[in-house]
Length: 118
Image 1: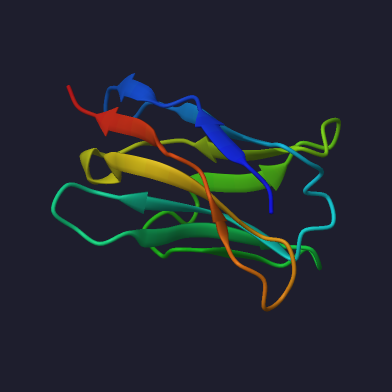
Image 2 (image 1 turned 135 degrees about the horizontal axis):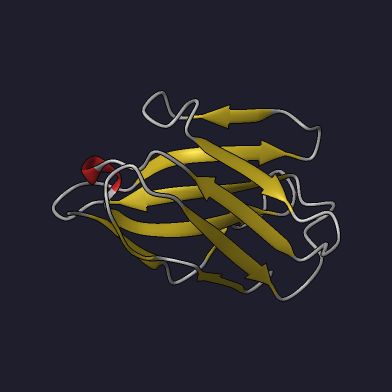
């Protein structure tokens, strides 16, 4: 198990950028999979981006070319999400997710609010 704490959310105008961070209570360097999900008001939680231990990265079609998921090389306990060209439809609570190994229980953070509005 690992505890996850997200930060970096806030209010930004359309076209702006934000960088989200997810701080883990332990090393995530060897985690099988890490990811970001989001939940808009009145909608189900949806996948934003995943990064696997193998290096494979997946993005939701809606964020491809605008968002970048990465592990902080200098800090083995931090997952990042760089969000550029933000749109109002990117608004929601963003959650960090960790699956340390296949078959294990997934770990979730409490979320950080992102609001894109003029």
